[in-house]
Image (cartoon, rainbow, N blue to C red):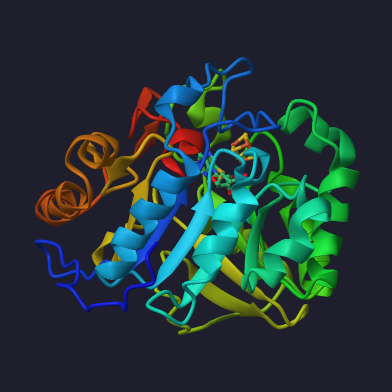
Length: 337
Ligand code: SAM
Ligand code: SF4
């Protein structure tokens, strides 16, 4: 970038009056794990030529910042498997305090041992780590080959580097239902917030979504039988509803796209690693920022951001039933979870 001072441009406000201040930017569809609810065993990854370069990802990110986006989450796929992604994160970190207020990362933690110090130095304060189980065998099976020790070492390295960690766990009827209290207890003991997430019908996986789907109201009931949960009113600007667990002292969030719609307060959009702007996680349809950027430059890109505000749907359309599911045909790794 040229160092030109930030000029306040028109903010991004959609047709339902929701102001978009949060961008989730997927930097790769690739991953070193193959979580059974996220990917097939043998996913077809995109050819590198289709993926935005690091410079293009930066241009896209800064176009959003120029339109009032104050928070960017770098995600994937597994963001830290992309070569040199740390340089993109460092360059975005240079924008902190100049329009950008928060830069964060969602990761499976396998590479945090290597990258945590540089992430902290780049200005990151927080990382979300996906960890669905503390049982090494279950972890290995669920991720199709991952090492729990490696993920835990990554989490420890992030803490040593001064990063605040939130553990995200997808609640899975067929995998971790009984072990969720133990996971929460461990995380709270380590000082980490936890968010539980309902599995969403995104992309095709081998498993039946109905066998995976565990409604979080049932999980909450189960937790209330053992602990005292007090609703918190913390406005995180996100879809999670939080409680304080009296016995552990920790914070626990519930993201319930299936059982309770959270779209009214939506403040976010997603950009895939191929530059597709998805205004809604749970619906198909996207705008091609890559084509705009490559053929029309920054002006064309900016015009598409306005278009996205007109087309952003009011709500997602996720459903999971015994007879089938509906949601988005793209998977979470490609979308930028
Ligand atoms: N690889 C990184 C990770 O796992 O944290 C970042 C990308 S991953 C796609 C982002 C988040 O999406 C993770 O917390 C993962 O558990 C979640 N996720 C993936 N597929 C999902 C699905 N079908 N339903 C709900 N959450 C899903
Ligand atoms: Fe990889 Fe994250 Fe998907 Fe697991 S959830 S396969 S770690 S992208």
